[in-house]
Length: 351
Image (cartoon, rainbow, N blue to C red; front, side, top):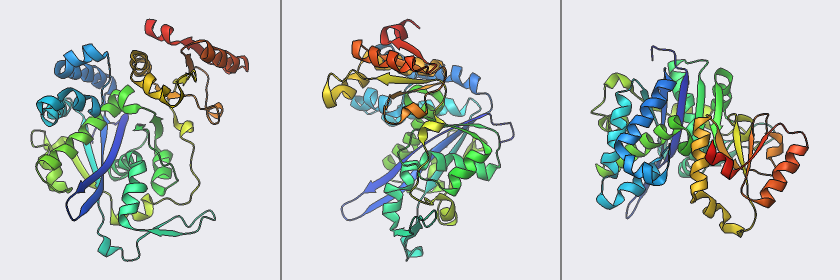
C-alpha cells in the first residue's frame, strides 16, 4: 500500500460449514483500499453494466449486492463464475483487496473467551462458537478495517462500513476511530459502490471455498485469487493474538447514528400495512429509487426511528414520505426547526 489510501470500505460475514456430525464457524471479511475512489466509482458502473446490464435494466439498480447476483444467476448455476468476473475486473482497476479471517482453536482456550470486565460490567466467559457467531460476527466489518489499518499503519482515511448489529466498544473500535473518519452505512451494500464491492468479494471467497471444499486459511483464500496480481491481494488473520483488542469491553454500546454519513435519507412509513409494510417498501420500485439517490449523494437510507433518530438528524438530511400521514409527520418535524429537506417519493424520482 504505497499510495495514500483515501477510502477504505469493509464488509464481513459469518463463515459456517455444517456436516453430519460437526460444525465449523469462523468470520470472513474484505476491506478494499482505494487511492482514487472517484475513478473506481466510474469503473464500478462500467463493470456491473458489462456483466449484469440486462438485469440492471429490469431492476433499475445503480448498486448491487451479492444477493442480487445470486437471484439473477441461480437458475443457470453461474453464481460463482459471475462473481469471479466481477472480482477479476476489480483486481485490474488498481484496488487493493484485503481479506481478513478469524478462527480459534478451542483447545488453546480452556477457560473460554473473556468478555466485558470494565465500566462496572462483570466479566463473562463464553465459548468460541458463541463468541464467533453472536459477538465477533456481529461487528466484523469494523474488525476487518481495523486489522488492515493497524497492520499497514494507515492514517487519515475515510472508512465506509456496512451496517452491523452489535456495537459494543472494543479496543479495535476505539483505535479505528482515533485514526480515521468512520462512516456506517445502513443498507451500504445496496447504496454504496465501495461497500457493494466488498460485499460481493466476501461472498465470492465464501462460495469459492465451499465449492472447492477448502478450509478457511490463507493458502485457500489466495487460491481464490489465482487470476489476480499477488501484489494486490493481502490476507490477514485475526485470532488468538488479537483477543484483547476484539472482545467487547463492557455492555455499553456506542450510537450507530453518530457515524451515519451525510446526508441521510430518513424514510417515514405511513403505518397502513402493519408488520408487512417494510416488505412492501423494500420490494417496490420506490425503494430502488431511494437507494440509487443515496448512491448519487454518497449518503444512505434508513427508516426514521422516532425514539432515537431525533439525536442524529443533521442539517441537509432528507425526510421522505409516501403519502398524507408521512407528509404530516415530516412537516411537523421540520416545524421544530430541524434543517432538513422534506420531499415526497415522487420528488426523488425526478432528481
